Length: 169
Image 1 (cartoon, one colour):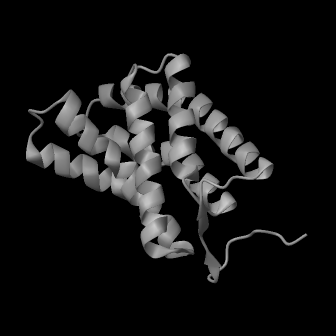
Image 2 (cartoon, one colour):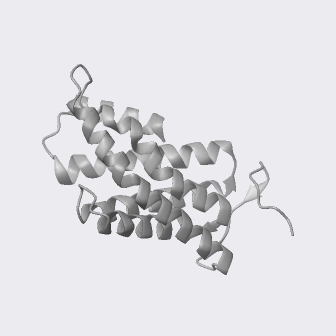
């Protein structure tokens, strides 16, 4: 049996043709991601209360939320696994009473969709594609915050949050 590790010649293939192993990986990472994202979200809320830290500093933790999605796509090498992992991760977070409520399902779904789009565009799994997918996926939640939760957010704070989240991913 060949190990499916990360190397520069790794390509991504298939669309929603998942084996039992692929589904096990997706379920495992969405469960882990959902279970760990709830306390990470509360830790991010705690960071907002610390004096001296600028608004948006909690976005430094946003990379932890998408780590599971990126790992799932990287290990399964299937387009659609990021979206499915994001959806299931969001549902786990929702049922574990995330402070975002039902919106967490949309946020996680968008993160997974963006990861899939990046891997579809690049068609290779390497360090660059992993970093780019993680960064764009991680920072996608800032757009949801800006346009759904707080539409009056000043551009300077939005930019700061986006940059911090991008680096975190």
